[in-house]
Length: 332
Image 1 (cartoon, rainbow, N blue to C red):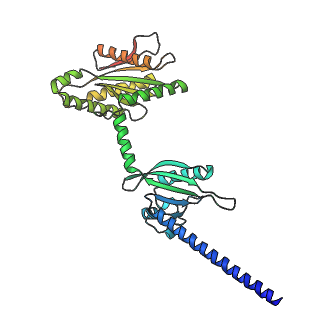
Image 2: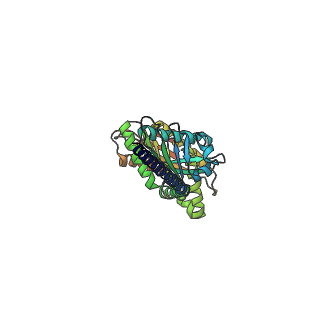
Image 3: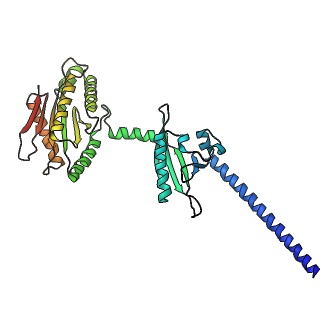
């Protein structure tokens, strides 16, 4: 019996030693695996981090630590407010809550402007991590600096949607805006107006001073128009010396007042020519019977009438479909 007990004790010792050895080896392998994973993450060209339910950092890879200027120990438990301006902190928290509460991945661009005014754009990809009732919710985030690509995209958008000479929206873009805003006005039944402006006798300026000076006149006129359209109105170069301004949420009276303001501002601006530069403006306001083409035609007809009325004039088309005559004129 004693021999049997000794044998069993020996076997138990051997098994225990084996299990301890196996556990130690597994722990060593797990430690090596974690070290390898950490090393790999440290060489990724992006900031990778884990945050808790309060948006406090639990882990960050080397690029993220270098960006924040801290080590792993100093990072743990720190909030975004330690590293970002308040506007960015609020935006990041909004994204974090969306990921944590809805348990859905998020992929959004975030602009970060530092105290010097420099802006960096990050692509924020965030994913909820698995958890159980005994654990708190956490997320993993990957932030990639896409400033260069973002800048290039903005430049391409600028070229695609803006007139190269004046910087205003081009015809392609304003056509899109016009259609969107017109449909919105019809759906929500709010006021909607447009105006078409044409610089008076512009061909004579080109003929007398040359096209380079003519371009400068167009640029100055566009600057005046843009300065006058800093709220609701949306200005564009419609073609040549003609400009279209879309005026969502603006009544006929409001648009008429703005048109006269622009007329006077263009007339009083400084140009590289001796003669006074003036503009004629035609206005049209939406009613239930108009479609987009009809509205544009009425504004164009009003502009034609303004030209024939002596130029430097604002003519407002009637809102009644049966009314072909203007209802209001502004001129000196």
